[in-house]
Amino acid sequence: MLRRLQRVLTGMEITCEGVKLVRILREKRGWKLMGCLSVPFPEETLKLSYKNQNVNDPQAFTRVIREVVRRAEIKGGRLGLAIPSEVVKVSIQHYPELPGSGDEIERMVGWWSRKSLPFPVEGSRISYHVLSPTTRGERRLLVAIGFKEVIREYEMDLREVRIYPEVIRPSCLNQFNFYQERIPPSGVTGFLGLLENFFTLFVFDAGDLIFYHGVRRGFSDIHFFQDVEMTLDLFQSENPNMEIEKLFFATQSGYGPELKKGLESLGEMEVLELDARDIINASEIESSANGTLDLDRYASAIGAAQSLLE
Image (cartoon, rainbow, N blue to C red; front, side):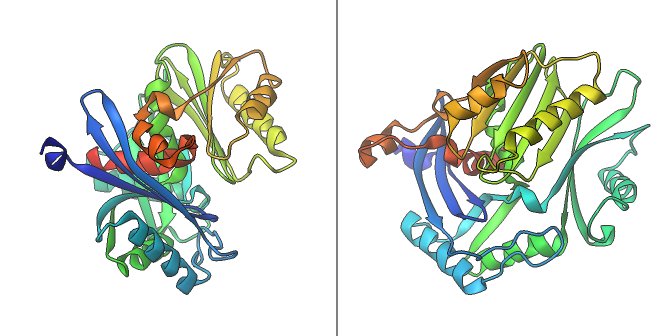
């Protein structure tokens, strides 16, 4: 009876490779995974772009979404959605001061971003999170900007199967939000999140976010570690008096030992891999599947489900 009264949250992640869906439950001792599944797309179903249509094959896209809904036995409803990080611009922006209202802040962000966007700022959808001020008193925002028509395409295609996203975020932010409780709020720490074809670096000083950078590059690319090193150098050039003491990482693509070894070669920092099992209980799912579940693959989908409680 108690289980029926508790609220099960649904999260979905859409990537270029396929769709992942999870159902989770918040319990007194933490999170519990109630179910998860993954269905691949046929090749070239999606062609990721900031400003142009992403769904290259609408029939294939809808067919996969219907298969996910059928197998998950959900009859429509609300969910948290993670869309590809490759189609949303995320950055930390600095301003002398912030206006008083949310609408005014969005207009200011749009005005300051207009030259760097690959689409008209008038057609953008802006989301932001206020960060702590700099030591010089500048106000800082973590900003995500997407093209309305691109985001609306995902929304409308999901509505065809009676799925209504309530919170939409790029996968990289959902992945970080899932793991963030395992990152200690002390010292200079970094989080490197590896998705299928994208990686991000977040850096914190005593728990305050001071640096973000995302790169469209997957682990299988020959230039992957070169781009990670360049991203670390970029942080160092912007913060010459700081060094990352601990670098935490999580991967949705596997290759954890290889990734750890490669990251350790890039500096003197301590490198630690985060494990999704320390955050969410998946024992029932693993026992029913008679095998080990690669739980980290579902981190962004779980983070999308968790966003419904925020």
